[in-house]
Image 1: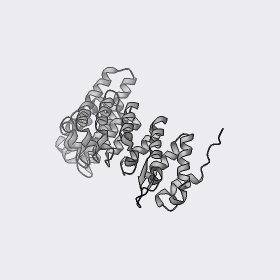
Image 2: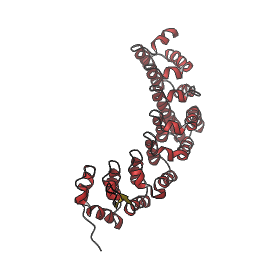
Image 3: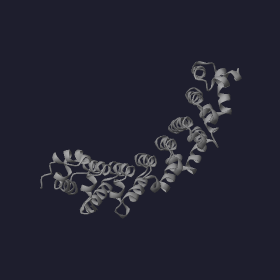
Image 4: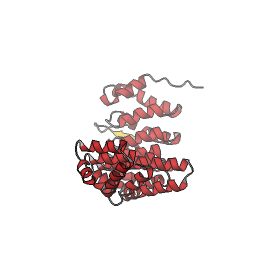
Length: 315
């Protein structure tokens, strides 16, 4: 019977039979399929149909069998993560084992929680060792973000520490910037502080805001940072000056409003900045240059917002 299963794993139709056997078959049938999967997990995970059978097994086998199955990825995690099919299996491994560990911890079963975490550790450890490369990869960055979103301690701290160590190299990367944004959403205040320092050091807000990828990080910091961090970012926008196409200096916030990427940073600042003197100053700077901004396509949303602005009455 086992040789028949081998032929079905990566067959366009046969894989559905195995998935249904996992869902509705007897315990003996599930045991046979589970043993076969256990012996060749990494290879099957990289097959177009085999990866579906593996993921179905995660849903249908017992929790301990799933944990044991996932632990067999040790030494082959990167091989799967860089694969168009295998990366989905690793992502599901992270989410399902993290969920099991969290449930066990909430139920006060520390031994079971440790068992699930131990089964996931080989995946976490291999990802941590290659965190920069994975964070800059179209598939790898997804697995890193699943860890941020689903893992519990101590695994979450391990991944956060490794990302913060290389976050400066990720800010301007087409995939890495999403990892940094997710750190701000799922991480600690200390992580947001470290990222804030990177984007504001040496008055770098304007520079990062004009870059396609890094501008996303600046926007995220405006939304997810604290009030003090928002104010410091906006103050850089108000204090700095840029040289326009005619080699004349102009306010950075006006220059940013004309830029294909930085205009979104200005728009976000207008949306999230707390009421007060600095917010009034930001709107005032834009109002005083409204005629110039009205002819710039990138500034149309900013212009619309500025036109509806009503300053707070003075006490």
